[in-house]
Picture 1 (cartoon, rainbow, N blue to C red):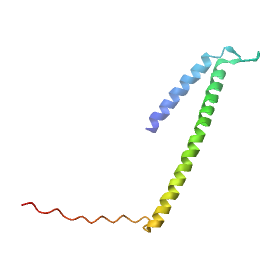
Picture 2 (tube, one colour; picture 1 turned 30 degrees about the vertical axis):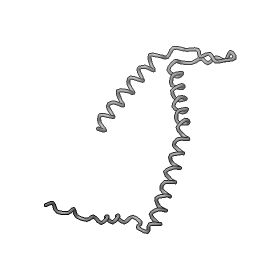
Picture 3 (cartoon, helix red, strand yellow; picture 1 turned 45 degrees about the vertical axis):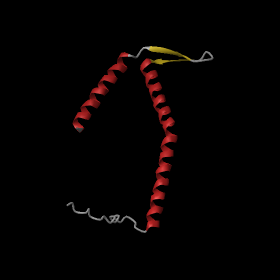
Picture 4 (tube, helix red, strand yellow; picture 1 turned 135 degrees about the horizontal axis):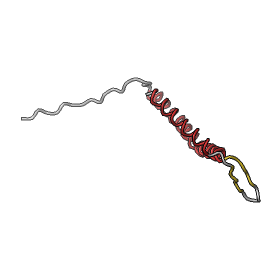
Length: 104
């Protein structure tokens, strides 16, 4: 499986490298207030891809921290319940079950 992922990575690198070589023409990016940015198309695409990935990670950060806090609180709750029961990590004892009455 490692071999297949290596081959796929090499193929993708070659495709993206070819894309970069084919898109070296200059482009103008116009912002508000007459601000203009000029550069190769492939660098503009790369910059906006990286900026989008960074914004996506920043958008997920509160969710990740909230889930970590909930996990920590749940772990503390489980530990307190286990210590209150006094069983620790021992296996639970089975309930007593009466056998069914024999059928006539």
